[in-house]
Amino acid sequence: MYLSKEEERTLDGEKGESSRKAMELVVALGKIYGANDLVEITSAHLSGASYKTIGDGGVRYLEDMVKGGAKVTTRSTLNPIGMDRERWKEMHITPEFAEKQLKIIELYGSMGVKTTCSCTPYMNENVPSLGDHVAWAESSALSFVNSFIGARTNREGGPGALAAAIIGKTANYGLHLDENRKPTVVIEADIDGSLFSHSMLGQAVGMAIGNGIPYFRGIKPTVDDAKTMAAAMAASGSVALFHVEGVTPEAKKFDLNDLETISIGKKELEAAYSKLNTVDDVQLIALGCPHLSVKEVKDIAAFLKGKKKKNSDTEIWFCTSAKIRDECRDEVKILEQFGPVLADTCMVVAPIEGVFDRTGTNSGKAGNYLPTLCSQKVMCRDLSALMEAVI
Image (cartoon, rainbow, N blue to C red; front, side, top):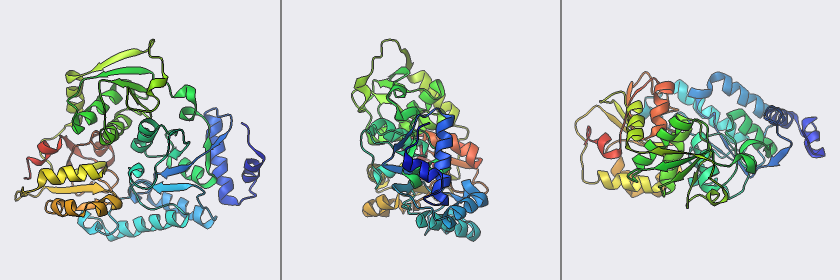
């Protein structure tokens, strides 16, 4: 594996112990995956932000990095944390959890990471450009920027993305290379075009192809459609890149003649729906996985305007970024009549287990992760069907 003189000096510790450790990790990953060299990145997006997921061991790791003087050298943002940092009591969070969660944010911030805490950084302040090499660790976000924007990242782990952010480089393998971005299967999609149908399409495709690279025909997804579809494919399979005919920037590059074609229609969508639905009544309805966009907040507010919440014990959470919550103040007032609009967090990385055991969502991603990460039985429906129980 070729390293420049500067990279060799970093690996030798000339730029400090934290930079040495970061370079050592990036180089080790590169050797494992057969990289010939490193490539400069324009941004990083880091997972491992919730105390629920990293625990005390993760806190100690971050403390060690900070003590060693670690600083990121490129634009770096953070994934959702385990609570809204101001409204955590409304989420049934304990003071002990809150204290440790705030410590994690402080540690990342001291390394120069922007603590905006969203799984949709591309809707906020971390927007790559076509052809940019980046190091992103959130599965839905990296799939979106790989595909819809045409940036280049592998499916980074939390420590690897942080290491890349510190040295400003990542190993040049996998989806950073042209030859690995070619589609592996053509998907002929037949859906109704709704946001929820795109989520179920993503679920069905992930189930069908695992970690392949699908090329879609028959759909024209918007940003929100692509966001929810990418999230479901990454969760039900491990799809990190997709192409859509006439929509995504790289789709026109490829010869599809020798590729298998898979049709996804009513039968496959029903199978995906059935897999995600395991209960018909819920204690919590949680929207915003990935985080709600401005358009989604406005659409939900329009749907709820003039309606009233039933006398029900079912809680409703709306999860988005702090930036979007601030932008949509009028709509937030409508949503707040039904439940809290939470920033920085989501139902998947919050410690909802022990408080709830049955959760409703309109997200294929959440439908996959809630049973495994949160011990939930799930009702996965579109917005209007979800809300029938409470309005």
